[in-house]
Length: 359
Ligand SMILES: [Zn+2]
Image (cartoon, rainbow, N blue to C red; front, top):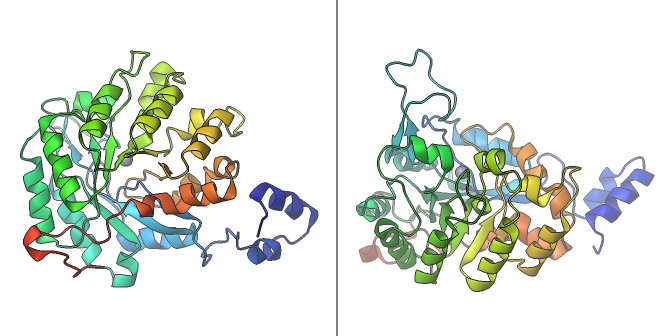
């Protein structure tokens, strides 16, 4: 039907029962609706203590929130509960204890997925993340994971490189997107046609310029065959606190989308405000124009950490922005762009060719 959401909302205001109208046009948002409205392109099944609700809870939340499919990943970092701390912190920023790289996160996820029946597993798209991005052994972990779970993995990430306070708390060297260790990871991604979800802040807390964008650019330029999803478009909540709205963000993202066809942008929560929506929760015209100019290059996600009760709230927060896009672009960003980035089958050890043991 050629009705936009805004037209329908106006019509709904005129009718006492708009449920039938929305149902008729296939745009019902009702809980458990057969027509999924969203794909969640960025979701963690555990928190920074490697704890999370069972995947059955995630699937229930997806059904209630009209989410058809979701990317799922662990978290590559573990927050230490330090001897000196009487209380386990709630987040990685809860105290000054360090965080460290934690590989078992991938095995936890793989095991949890294997408890699900195939029709449920097909809705979840697992990414590997449990490696230290400053270690040139990182690709050995990826290889081991696809040998242990052939056909399961559909992407790599969220790789955490530049991430303000989290980086400062992380044991060892500072990770960056253009290290030799990460180049080895990208070569692995290219061999298995896996997309890479990369968290690399565009700058530091204090520098009002795209200080670290060059690191992402050099990865994009060196590996044109690898599709990169830039998490949160390089933003973070901490950057917002220190910098406010970064006026260089949109021109930098725009230039890079033009220069690198393998760049995709994750719009999840720290992009939503203050970039996609203004202070009155109205869509920002320059971002509507940018997304409309590159309709296949943007994805959305919840970035939840092992708790799923806010899934519907997180994704419906995009509605005002999505409804400002042309209808076909809205459908791409809300649902299909992320799915189009996935490989035709999960990653397999080379000797097994196209293993199809897992759906
Ligand atoms: Zn994340």
